[in-house]
Image (cartoon, rainbow over all chains, first blue to last red; front, side, top):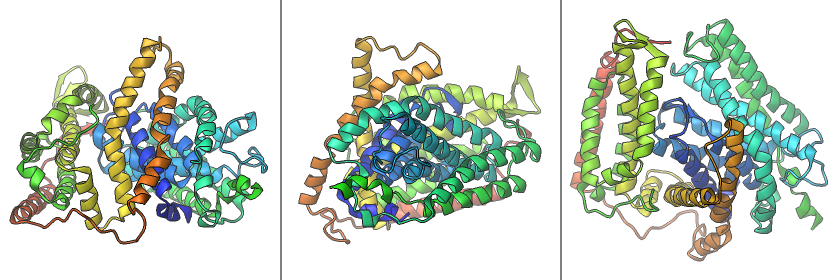
Length: 278
Length: 260
């Protein structure tokens, strides 16, 4: 995770944080008045396509942009509150996981073409995989916290956020990335063109890290929902059931730790292929 | 939404030290979240309304009135569905659920108002300066303040591009959710490209002015806390402590409320 700190010494990366945050926030605000799911907490968000795309194109700047953009969207959309604290972290991971996992998608992204593009079927699959994992990670981070805070039940919110995040990505993401990548690359703004390779975390056992990330996000979602429905009597749609149940927190906690460990194991350095070829 | 949210007034709130305004902003958020009962939210509501009027932020609130109306209507409907109580009024609406819906709606509007007061009364450079002097690294402060400043510009260009695409026949309203999502593509791409294309020039402009040259940044703007700043800060902290005391003592809850 070294690059999430070292990127702040690069002016262009800082500008990309600001621009990513502003674009994400602007679209969130425009659609705040659209279709609310839980007023004050979340709504149908077509803007959620941006964090994975920003993450892949701008790396850590995209992750910070997603986190800050969500906070600004909450501020001007009237949903700023206790949930915004973990909304910040959840959205950070929504942009962070895609670029960290991109080079460790079990061969879907070939080693000789690590470009953050969806110009092949396998790369589209890779995009969907990393988007799904990121969507679920974001969902369980926010829902876990809001359940502890006694605001919204885990089962309802984790599913809602995951589906909400992934729906936009699955439909719009590959097309958007296909259209944007050539331009961003031409302008020299892909994160691997801006950052130095040594400023990015080395990582270790990346494929195992990737598996751990998938288990952490998807496994955490499934385990958390099952425990929430079984033990706490929660429903997938509705506020029924007990919130603040220790069983729900404890069942999700190991998976959250897995996501953090996987974040340390994964790198992103492998995407500096073109730089080596030059 | 116009490109500029800051309003160049010389109000009492405009003249406060940005650090004080940021602290008040954070304290206000905590105060808003302490109580469920709308009656207990009234004191903070009055203080926020006074600030809205004094700072001129009502003009900006007017600009986002449609978002506020939609949020209010949806909040009033959905919180009546998601909560209930002992004292039935009609259909699914009880006194408790209605009270709770009003409280949640107030919470949203007050939070938006608080943010709007800060942005309306504080210049971008003052906001960054305030955040940095409160301990935030200046690069992070710069990113946040630039994003805040760019949001209205991008919202404006989104609306403009949306109108241009609609005039070419783009219909965002029809179709199911997936079809609707696909139709956003002609909006997303131009907004993204128009925002990102000048990044390199922006970067060069910043670096030519010495941005990032040293770890410690100096400022042309120099703020000194005045007597009024200390008075306002002391009042805010006192208000906050009193609010916390009443919340801890169990006041401000809605008796008989069931969130179902």
